[in-house]
Image 1 (cartoon, rainbow, N blue to C red):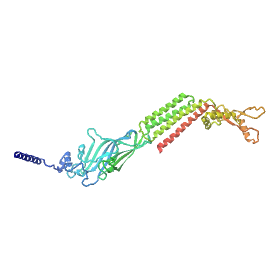
Image 2 (image 1 turned 45 degrees about the vertical axis):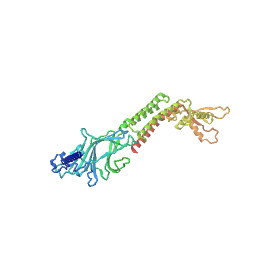
Image 3 (image 1 turned 90 degrees about the horizontal axis):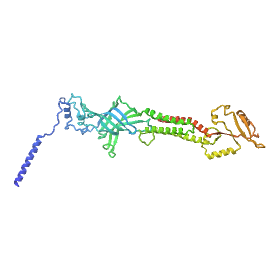
Length: 498
């Protein structure tokens, strides 16, 4: 037992001796000197300046004083590509520059002849850099071929300039109510991720905060205006709005885009006008020409639907109605009305009985054509049984509208039937010219009330169903274009003036 105890003591002493000798061989690290800094290379001087004994990249530049760190930002935009409307985003290529002051990196006293310290990713991993993010970001990445395009420069007074070239796809919540005559406002939102506004404040540079490349060109849009603003965003840890609760500094760069309508005018609006005008050709065809009129009407309808569907594929499915849909519904309404007009006149054309009209105008023609069949039969019986009514049949009722000369054809002679009481109760048939009829009617007005002549009879005109159908087609040739012009006036006034 004594021998065993003695051996344990010897082992403990030897182990303690080894540890003490090891500690003596590894001295504590010392801060490298910055004296005669001009004699060192940039990498050597930077390693001494940002050594862990005097610089901690995890701490704010003002952690000792507790002051607010002001970070100034500027951007240079190379490329803007607004995506299709159904994607609700846009692509941006830009150079983002951040500028702040870190007094711990000031070296003017140690290396007065050194102007700037410039580095790339290796320098980025040694110094403190503010953590910013884009709140409306869909995807983003640093640009570069072999290495990422990152550049950091440190001035002698400790001013740090951090530049990085980026490409980002950002969300843009578009309002498409006036598509394709819409104006969109899209923005890039930069916000502080880690530090709230009481510690870090983001600010745009006073001069040339955002610059656009002279070679920047847009295809579907035109850049109308752009502006910048600064704001404070309320952080909410419950809804995961930001990294923590409090107010966070934010920057916004907004640009206003107007959609170019030349493409839509040439590929949608003008062709749709021509298709609607093609549907009016049916008014010049005879009402019983069913095959060509149906073929023309259905082909124009299908052509316009195909044209409109190609435009609708590029739009998102939104709940509100768009200006392009109003145009679509209006043109479809005119094409469909032309088909309905053909069905109407074709139905009238196939009728066999003539129609009795009190006057040849729109009111009585439409009233007679829209009157139900039973009511028309009762009216004909009333005409046959009433002794106070007589009929006059002109050669052509349509010729009466086109001729303005009373002495012209169709107005030379009238055949009237008068029913006078006599012993034999026989009607007397007389043929009179137009002038005699006018003189006689004037003389009747001048006669006294006690005259034995019968009262004035109502004159009814008869038109064949074919004449009525042709009359409606002629009116449609004028009415449809006028209504379409009126629709265009209202539509384009709404698009550009409201």
